[in-house]
Amino acid sequence: MANILNLMPDLEPDEMQYIQTLVQDMTDQEAHQFASIYRARRREPMLILITTLIGFMGFAGIQRFLIGQIGLGILYFFTGGLCLIGTIVDLVNHKRLAYEYNVKEAYMVKQMMGVNYRPGQ
Image (cartoon, rainbow, N blue to C red; front, top):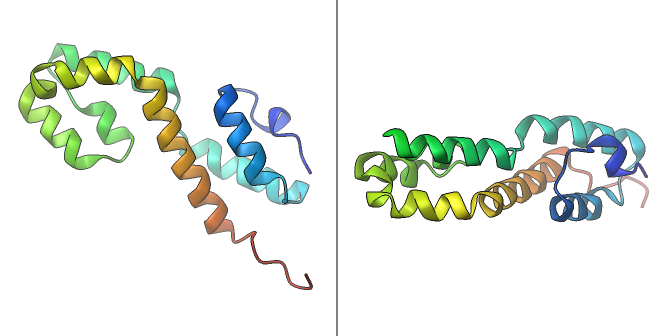
Protein backbone atom coordinates (compact mmCIF):
# COMPACT_ATOMS: atom_id res chain seq x y z
CA MET A 1 0.00 0.00 0.00
CA ALA A 2 1.29 3.43 -0.93
CA ASN A 3 1.65 6.15 1.68
CA ILE A 4 -0.81 8.87 0.75
CA LEU A 5 1.55 11.53 2.15
CA ASN A 6 4.06 10.65 -0.57
CA LEU A 7 1.40 10.70 -3.28
CA MET A 8 -0.38 13.91 -2.21
CA PRO A 9 1.68 15.94 0.28
CA ASP A 10 -0.51 19.05 -0.11
CA LEU A 11 -3.60 17.58 1.60
CA GLU A 12 -5.05 19.04 4.78
CA PRO A 13 -4.59 16.71 7.81
CA ASP A 14 -8.26 15.69 8.13
CA GLU A 15 -8.53 15.15 4.38
CA MET A 16 -5.33 13.09 4.40
CA GLN A 17 -6.73 10.86 7.13
CA TYR A 18 -9.92 10.26 5.15
CA ILE A 19 -8.02 9.54 1.92
CA GLN A 20 -5.69 7.18 3.78
CA THR A 21 -8.68 5.08 4.85
CA LEU A 22 -9.96 5.02 1.26
CA VAL A 23 -6.68 3.78 -0.23
CA GLN A 24 -5.66 1.37 2.53
CA ASP A 25 -6.94 -1.67 0.60
CA MET A 26 -5.58 -0.54 -2.77
CA THR A 27 -2.47 -1.78 -4.47
CA ASP A 28 0.29 0.75 -5.15
CA GLN A 29 -0.78 1.02 -8.79
CA GLU A 30 -4.42 1.62 -7.81
CA ALA A 31 -3.39 4.20 -5.19
CA HIS A 32 -1.31 6.06 -7.78
CA GLN A 33 -4.22 6.01 -10.22
CA PHE A 34 -6.58 7.20 -7.47
CA ALA A 35 -4.19 10.00 -6.50
CA SER A 36 -3.86 11.13 -10.11
CA ILE A 37 -7.62 11.31 -10.69
CA TYR A 38 -8.40 12.77 -7.28
CA ARG A 39 -5.73 15.47 -7.52
CA ALA A 40 -7.38 16.75 -10.71
CA ARG A 41 -10.86 16.84 -9.14
CA ARG A 42 -10.21 18.21 -5.64
CA ARG A 43 -10.54 21.85 -4.64
CA GLU A 44 -7.95 23.66 -2.56
CA PRO A 45 -9.33 25.51 0.48
CA MET A 46 -7.35 28.56 -0.66
CA LEU A 47 -9.24 28.56 -3.98
CA ILE A 48 -12.55 28.53 -2.10
CA LEU A 49 -11.30 31.37 0.10
CA ILE A 50 -10.20 33.52 -2.86
CA THR A 51 -13.41 32.95 -4.81
CA THR A 52 -15.43 33.78 -1.69
CA LEU A 53 -13.52 37.04 -1.34
CA ILE A 54 -14.40 37.85 -4.94
CA GLY A 55 -18.01 37.78 -3.76
CA PHE A 56 -17.42 41.04 -1.92
CA MET A 57 -16.65 42.70 -5.27
CA GLY A 58 -20.05 41.85 -6.73
CA PHE A 59 -19.51 38.33 -8.05
CA ALA A 60 -21.02 36.37 -5.18
CA GLY A 61 -21.52 32.63 -5.47
CA ILE A 62 -18.48 31.60 -7.50
CA GLN A 63 -17.30 29.40 -4.63
CA ARG A 64 -20.62 27.55 -4.69
CA PHE A 65 -20.32 26.90 -8.43
CA LEU A 66 -16.81 25.47 -7.86
CA ILE A 67 -18.05 22.96 -5.30
CA GLY A 68 -20.93 21.83 -7.47
CA GLN A 69 -23.72 23.68 -5.67
CA ILE A 70 -25.14 25.35 -8.77
CA GLY A 71 -28.48 26.29 -7.23
CA LEU A 72 -26.86 28.08 -4.30
CA GLY A 73 -24.40 29.72 -6.67
CA ILE A 74 -27.24 31.20 -8.70
CA LEU A 75 -29.06 32.26 -5.52
CA TYR A 76 -25.92 33.93 -4.15
CA PHE A 77 -25.28 35.65 -7.47
CA PHE A 78 -28.73 37.20 -7.73
CA THR A 79 -29.03 38.12 -4.03
CA GLY A 80 -25.54 39.52 -3.53
CA GLY A 81 -24.46 36.54 -1.45
CA LEU A 82 -27.77 36.66 0.42
CA CYS A 83 -27.04 40.31 1.25
CA LEU A 84 -23.41 39.36 2.04
CA ILE A 85 -24.43 37.21 5.04
CA GLY A 86 -23.99 33.96 3.10
CA THR A 87 -20.69 35.18 1.69
CA ILE A 88 -19.42 35.99 5.19
CA VAL A 89 -20.50 32.56 6.43
CA ASP A 90 -18.72 30.92 3.49
CA LEU A 91 -15.64 33.02 4.22
CA VAL A 92 -15.52 31.65 7.76
CA ASN A 93 -16.31 28.08 6.64
CA HIS A 94 -14.20 27.90 3.46
CA LYS A 95 -12.12 24.96 4.75
CA ARG A 96 -15.22 22.98 5.66
CA LEU A 97 -16.75 23.66 2.23
CA ALA A 98 -13.58 22.42 0.51
CA TYR A 99 -13.31 19.38 2.79
CA GLU A 100 -16.91 18.30 2.23
CA TYR A 101 -16.54 18.67 -1.53
CA ASN A 102 -13.23 16.80 -1.55
CA VAL A 103 -14.59 13.92 0.55
CA LYS A 104 -17.48 13.52 -1.86
CA GLU A 105 -15.13 13.59 -4.85
CA ALA A 106 -12.72 11.10 -3.27
CA TYR A 107 -15.56 8.68 -2.65
CA MET A 108 -16.78 9.11 -6.23
CA VAL A 109 -13.28 8.46 -7.60
CA LYS A 110 -12.99 5.27 -5.56
CA GLN A 111 -16.40 4.11 -6.79
CA MET A 112 -15.49 5.01 -10.37
CA MET A 113 -12.32 2.94 -10.11
CA GLY A 114 -14.32 -0.03 -8.85
CA VAL A 115 -11.64 -1.17 -6.40
CA ASN A 116 -14.18 -2.75 -4.05
CA TYR A 117 -14.42 -5.83 -6.26
CA ARG A 118 -11.36 -8.02 -6.65
CA PRO A 119 -11.60 -11.24 -8.68
CA GLY A 120 -10.39 -14.25 -6.72
CA GLN A 121 -11.18 -12.86 -3.27
